[in-house]
Length: 419
Image (tube, rainbow, N blue to C red; front, side, top):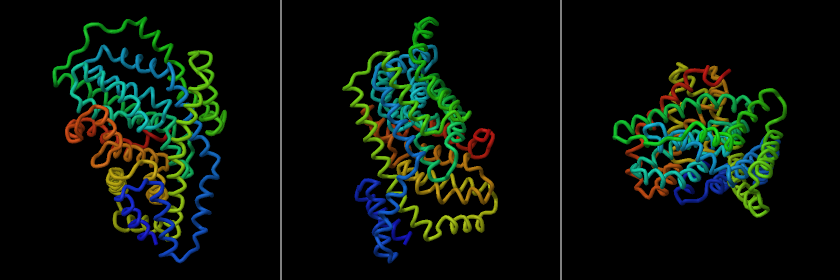
């Protein structure tokens, strides 16, 4: 039944059927025609997956992000990031990296980050003399920082399928996110030196930077407040998400004073649409997960890997390679929801902590977002930069190398994710 489901799903994906619909159709067809089971199982699993209290954190975090980035705060964050990097060679490229760090503490979505930042920064970088393909490659890779810096939507999804603490995952994602950002900053500087890009003659004064830091402080403080609230047990993840919405509304009302009823409605609709898209994938993957469990695929896969490869180092390497391959054609949410139940037992069999596994999966699949042939952030960035996919791909290699080094560290140095 699992094999039939996979084949039908692949056929539907080749026919360009949306992922959520493809998951539901392939699961229902496999259950009805190959499993000999009643279709009521599909309805039960679709409903059961929505009955998760921690899942409520996701739409509220999305709403908080849209509220904070929909007004003056987004402009202040971009100004702060660009002025901070003015002193660097390759500062315009580095601005994308820094902006991804500060936006990551608000949006939690790599695709949203690539679209929002790319549409503003890539045209500006091109006017500064940087090649369009290089700008697109930088934007598509920097966006992955967003899914490591809390709050991260993919980490919430992994928590859903693995039962791992959201607080532990958010805390664990902070250091890898900073490492990736640092590596990409050095890469931007190296490219600028190698190609002869110079720093601007005038850079921002400390007074200007202090003013911009103050105006950006509400967004910069949000991930810190989230981590403190979760780490010290002040509230549950869902309650923290609701408080984040209240915080975003308060900042818009009293600090920036830019909220209007129309903008609030637009932000609500935007967050609702984004939540609906992810929820469709979640409920679709629930049926797929039930079929895999019914056929005992996770247990058999773990037993087969354990019998074939005894060395834990090689097992982790095999998991990374498989995740990188799957992450190329398949988007991040369905990949986490489908592979999580398979990899969690395998990780347990070799003593790999589930928190570390979560960061390995998210970073792997994040790299898949800009890896050809079907890289979402790669397509978005190339489209915004008005350059070819081939030219953008040729500029990817230094950024990809840094990402793979950070991935290796996360995979084999537990101290980076387990505190």
